[in-house]
Length: 397
Figure (cartoon, rainbow, N blue to C red):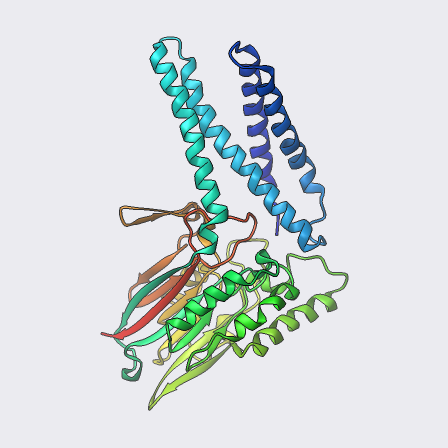
């Protein structure tokens, strides 16, 4: 887990300013007792002090317990920032001198009601939504799909981030059972099994082993699976842990399509599954671990091809218009763990960072599906971004 310092500093300055204004307002008000001011100070000071010292914690070498504490602290802090900022912005309207007294009372009530609603949303984001799942069924048509694969089904899941769950296997067991219940022809995992180290996945091996499909469980690695988010004494130890993760996935009965390809054959027809190591894309923190051109001999041949790649940015950068890859499956974005659905539309701040952040996209005859993942990283919440299982049905036009 990386701490993003610029948002952290901006949030810190914002909350200090708001806290100071709230304190001054409480001090001037005759209707509020000293206890309210003390309660405000008692909550504001520890959070502010914690955010000041947080960047100095060596999180790269920290234990999972320390990282879990950091995640929860960030969650609490940013929740307070959001609720206080919105409520304070509304409440400040009551200071308008021309506003009648009944209007001022209504504004104050609206501020309190808004804070309460946001608190409920936060509760659901941390205690309810992350432990539900949603099955999205998608049918995609292709003119060149081999006849034997008409109606072929693929269950895609992504970004499990198993370290988030500690050793509690309850939700993972329910999630993997839901995948099996779909009875897909093939299961594809598009990366980020863990947060930092292979040991995070070990409690979940029995659940991962249960995943089954006639044409197997195919997997690739995501940016978190290369141990770049943890400090290592030597490069040799880091590489050894990378290999341990690969062995763990293979012991679960998965086929790791790591910078290579394989063919799925039904009768006289076949399709190619291509897997590539994670591409860093526009992010400077994520190295590139694979090359598409080295994973398949001729990317412009007539064979029907499905690419498994963790980072969806690859699709627009090196797939569309440059290859004959028909379908790309990706993950990585999490929809930034915040998504709202209204009137059939899906809204997420992920739009500001990713051109393709969730769902189905197409350009010409080439298609991309981005799964918003299962787990959590950074902060332990999913606001509206329900863990996703995608069931893709391939149809011949």
